[in-house]
Length: 583
Ligand SMILES: Nc1ncnc2c1ncn2[C@@H]1O[C@H](COP(=O)(O)OP(=O)(O)OP(=O)(O)O)[C@@H](O)[C@H]1O
Ligand SMILES: [Mg+2]
Image (cartoon, rainbow, N blue to C red):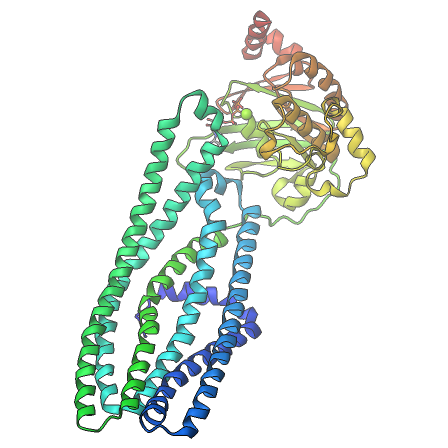
């Protein structure tokens, strides 16, 4: 049926089509299967004519002999073609799913950090699961309807025409009526299906949060709050789904009722013709069976709009991710190992237009191999400052140079290869301790290097008591380890990467004083001959730095060595005094 398809839908569908076209051969099998199905089904209803007239009424022996054979043949073909259709369409569907999933996942790997900051995880996660399946389901059922059902309708019409042209005209009159009704109902679908996907994302989000935050839920008695959140999300999901079901089933019901009236009319007309001797019983039965054969396909054709709209809404959400801009990576400089001079020249940064500046006019000049300590109040911009160096975010103005090359001129890969990072929140992957240590490009590392790093970062200290040692699984995000153990793995990871520039953001904050002191030794070895940015609240770790800067609300308010800053008696001296009165 030629529904008026709005151009947006057509664009999305023709784009989706590109995921199907690589599977031409399998698609061909599916088309053959569907065509065969349509033909044999029409053949079946056609045979009802001779079955009735010649076998049952005229009692011709010849027909009695060949009719069962013909029926058998039809069912064999029907079975085989059904199998060919389903398995080849399934094959295509699963490949479309894999392709889309891989593409979206690949996109997640190259999207800028900013993108993830602005999104909630739930809807992103449900795109990978729910939306992708929805797209494939839509594509395969739309294809089935477009080919098999349409052909069945055509073949059935042919049988009807052959059996009785006049009756066929009656039926043909019904089609525009049904089409008009369907057109009216179709508009509503797209709206609802978009909302359903949103509410699935919300469900994923809420569930994900209680799974991750179950300690907080328990400790703060957040049961009712969480239940309420789930009920809201689930209620929304149910409501939208019910609306969709209502619209869809109403569409079906209306179609059926219209058909009912139509059939009654046809029965009346056929009855008249039969009485007048124009129509034999066989022709009557065959005509009717052909019409009935049309009913289901017609119903599916009328519903195809809903399926199509759902698929389009789902595909739209995927294409939105796929069309997002990647991290800018237009630099061409690759240096295997930079010397490590780092200069911040009048760097300003803000997380977004609406948010105020987080860093203003920061100037830093750090020679290769030296250590810069960054201190300042919580929220003063320390982590932000160091996150600019590996280009997790783009500068608002100013420049950062490594060995006098602006970091934008490096390829991202080369830039990041030269930087090791121990971040404030340690991120571990659900894998073994060894694989977490060797995460990234380091998989091919020799065993001794791994052991040496594990030793130096005091990871062996706690793994030696574990039955599986370094092969112990760390659990989701490392939940099976203590905070300090996680931190030691992160330090070991940085040690292994052995890059000329090192960033330590509160690298030892979760360690007790004794472990910290020991790790400090490891870190001192690590920092030697590397350009290091170290952020620490404990000033004892800061004292030995070659230079210290104090950040306040994104500005460098003081800089110099420990001794000089103490003498100055400004912010740093005040922080220092505060710490000593603490200890
Ligand atoms: N991803 C982000 N998007 C928007 N704003 C952010 C983001 N990360 C941090 N901010 C804001 O930027 C400011 C500086 O944050 P930053 O994490 O750099 O502080 P910090 O000095 O490292 O603090 P802390 O000592 O607590 O780690 C804060 O006001 C914070 O709210
Ligand atoms: Mg921080």
